[in-house]
Length: 129
Image (tube, rainbow, N blue to C red; front, side, top):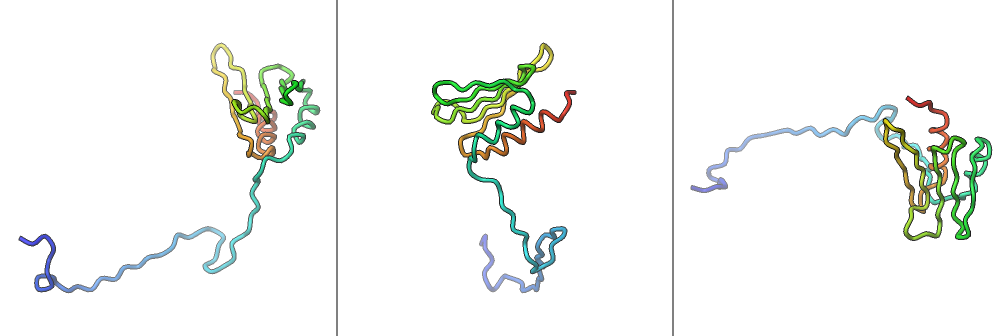
């Protein structure tokens, strides 16, 4: 028994297959795609300073050039360690409570500083549950 049919046993049949591209709302076929510039590169760590000062955070710089900052209630830690090969460049950590565990977010040295700042700003503007 042949697994693959030979030309003498194949039946000829016509089949039409229609392939369409997915539709993207707001785009017209053949129309221009909006160019967007995405954040890339680390940026300047000094962009964080105005936020820290405006919201009464305390901070220190250690002899290695790392920054350690704490929120006014000391529950949120911000660390910046640009030259430490054993640490992430940015760390945001929130201390847990007796009922809820804490958490931390880390960013490598190539993460845009604006993302770190946006996370801090979002944390500041949101109320706790």
